[in-house]
Image 1 (tube, helix red, strand yellow):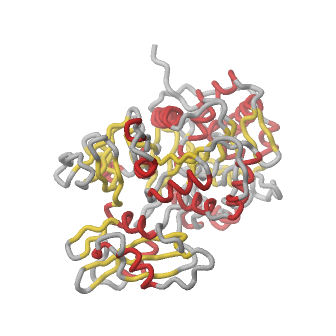
Image 2 (cartoon, rainbow, N blue to C red):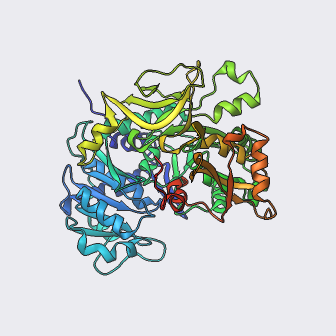
Length: 530
């Protein structure tokens, strides 16, 4: 008998096994799993009363809150499609995305509805606007009010008949050019990602997960599903504050958090980190640009947290690899362990990965030859919403082409050396910006750094460093940075110029926006960077 893999299975299991356990912590509020299911049922029935049926899209614009968390389960429980939106976009972006996906209901946090009010009349498919409460405000004219809607609704469980291949979410990716694309993920894709999370991140009912990563970002990497299924406790965090994060880790007994490298870097450099005593074991999971081994060492030595590097992308739900250290490698000492933990790692279960050259042939697994990483798995998206041509470009013969350049060694470890567009080709030499950034992060005065290509008359393009200095390091000069790099790597790889700024531009998930940094240098150039 075929039993479909559906996302609401995870909450059903937690309610059955852990009904009185605290499911969600939001400030002073504590919600048990039984109470959570009751609220989800009420929200599901509310959405049905608002005309939402199977296959309809429901858009959410919210930071990490209980209401956002409830939305994932209620929307998917009735067979509708969740469309979480990046909270750092502008009204014009929301106009495009909400109309493009054809959402019928739009749920918006009270901290953010000022972004939507100017474009409400342009959102042609929206029948109802629902205001999600914040600490200070829960109502506004022209908006339905969340809690009264739930109070009036039936708490009786209703779930639509579905197949695991039915779409569960549409996730709009922030492209470097043009409009964002809507990634369609099925219940099955999200289910497999959740299982991989449970296995490879070792999720248990003893865990307390801090939602440091925005839940709109690839559904919080699937953690609202995986850790719920295991009966863990979720701690909500509205906005990034390193001091508050350290307080929550200590006071709520947080055992795991997922975040971007920039957020973890903030925590490492917060003075409170040196005096906050944490009794429990903590593991921190990072994705994005691979950090240098020295960063891994600092996390594990200075914070005492276990560092877990993963690799993936929105189109893959998102996890593809985890930097698990094989036992015989661990025997080679701490330096080797930190080196391996800084890599993308080994393919997860149910994930096939290849690193291929420009002809589509597998590169030699020597840790040196560079090719594009391609993936085949149940976690790979069904395609881009209403963009079949873009889907056909991304998925070729069943393999998703990531656009990431990497190597693979004889042990199967994949290391990402750059995005295709971030490889710097200077005088015919390929330069990995990640490698140069790794050297920059070794400098004690460097807080953050990015390497970009800028045009050069003789070499075509050259590496340029954009650096944020630690407080009190203003005396560091461009020459100091360049010489520091030259002592550590081939001179052709080193930055030829250095720019000091106060803050690097980042996406909502904490990724550095190199396209923003490059733009001023290339706008007036005859040749645009690839």
